[in-house]
Amino acid sequence: MISYKDLGLLILFLIISGVGVYTFITLNNLNGILKRVRELMDKNSSNIDKTLDRLPSIASNVDDATAKIKDEVENAGDAVGLISETVTDTVLSVSDGTQEVIEYIRIIAQIIKIIINTFFKKSK
Image 1 (tube, rainbow, N blue to C red):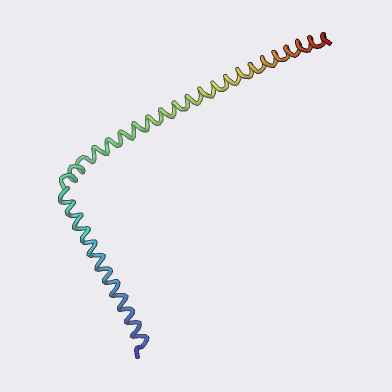
Image 2 (image 1 turned 135 degrees about the vertical axis):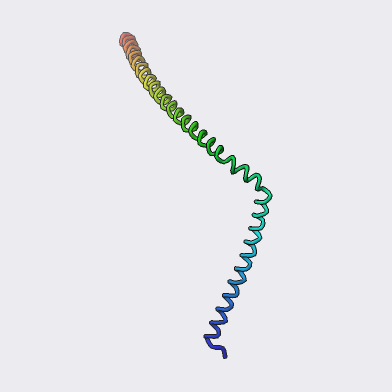
């Protein structure tokens, strides 16, 4: 008869064995990946060195481009502000002109009503 202690030790041994096998497989795969990375580094070491040598000038160019973009965005913001003001002024002018036209139309309508009422009163 197997005791609970023996059964527990067996289960613990199986779990530790499974974790060990999984760890071995994972380390084997990781070793393969590291070999490929090392091969790529060896093949491209000259390109990597050239890129690292150019990195300060690239960073400088990025800084310059960022500064220029910032200036252009500020200029565009100013232009949008001016356009907004111009459009607002234009809308106000058109609105004022429209109000004047509406007043003229009302006056003309009143004159036409007076003329129509005058002719219809004489006809009766």
